[in-house]
Image (tube, rainbow over all chains, first blue to last red; front, side, top):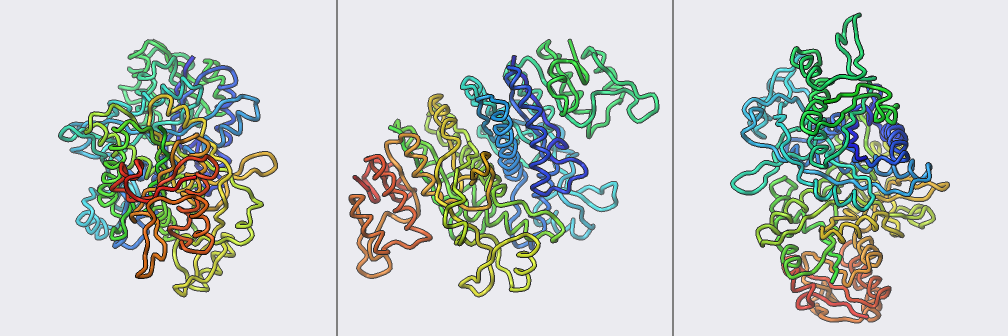
Length: 310
Length: 310
């Protein structure tokens, strides 16, 4: 049984963490322990992960340099986080597997994802990235680097980039080869490096792909038996921010879709997770689950979290 | 015939370049074109690459942030450059292969390399990394982050880290699997992420491994038929900085070793390349070549550059 396991950004950098290397290792070790248990039970897994705090950190670092220094584009920054987090996860997972006596290797595959320049997000970018700027600074950066700014709820200005839908994972054949060789692939970090077809060739684009939607697509392409989205909440709930909070234990995809469409789930957090799960179940007829990282094994067995069925 | 092809840092960021993304793409596209020609001729290749300018850039970016922000460790920075440059190379190579009608994929493998904490470099670190600091700043960083500083020939202070010898490439089995699947692996970027055995587990360490020595070791481990070191000079020369410069076209490893030992080749540039070639030839009895990236195909055929034989 093959499961695509998507790790939330918080799994790799908890909210209380400031992003120091030792904090990252501790968080990733915890995640690796949970994942190693799944592997020990005999499940085949492909690991995907978010990169929000890390790509934000790199953009901030580059933006701290004098303006005459180059800023690397967002596609390159995503590629950097894939190497960075992929190394953390692969190294920790192999350590935990060895501890459990499982002879299995992990391999990081920096991954590109096809998007379309016709995606409406390219006309109206929605995803804020990087630091906060005053109006004048924003105008300078807009002129020199072509960045698009929007006023942030916090008052300052922030760069926004498109968040287009993922259409195809370019490295899927390589991931299949690794699975055949009994290796655990770590892929599609941060939703993948976006590339688009421009006059017959693939060009990298400055955009951010939602990691849950990319994971869902990857699970379809790999013909996976399950999509498991592991995060820091115990599952999907209705009326989340009210005293009438109701946790869903098992739910049909079409029912969950109704909740999604009436706006039960916030866009930045549970929304894309729910959508990713619905899409996987609708396309494949198989199951998806959303639950706590610490209870990963229970979540993939349907004994914890929310199980989404056809 | 399997060749490990090592790309110099200059191949990815020419000296006249300031490090802008468009300059990187142009340089890597040129390299990819040369490599694609080798693949079209039917050679199997594994690509390794330097990361000097890029890891320097990332360290500088992180060091530009206020001191209360975390600085990521050097092992993580190397992992970032493996994702970054690996993506550039893989994407460009696939594009060039497609142009030549070769149906072959490339895959980036972030790679760890075993080193020993008993390496003398850990007692006396030799490799300068990151930016230049005044004495006071250096003292602050030394106290807060534990960095070791040495006075630089330029007058300021610079952080130094160990440059230990590579002992084992941890991802070799994965690279073998990829080769069996007809995929071109890109590996050991920047010499690899150094890890050392500490009380039975592997721990990442802050060090820099010479990419040519790591490539040589990888070529031995992969049982490669040749190690080809591609750079921006046309081969190995004696009396390089004198009017009596003499290019070597074919040379026995033991003869080259004599030149090496009498100090013909500078430590930072041709020295490690020559040493890497000698080691590969001595361990395997096979051939190594050092030459111009633009003439890559001729170099691997022994028709350009310097051919080192047993």
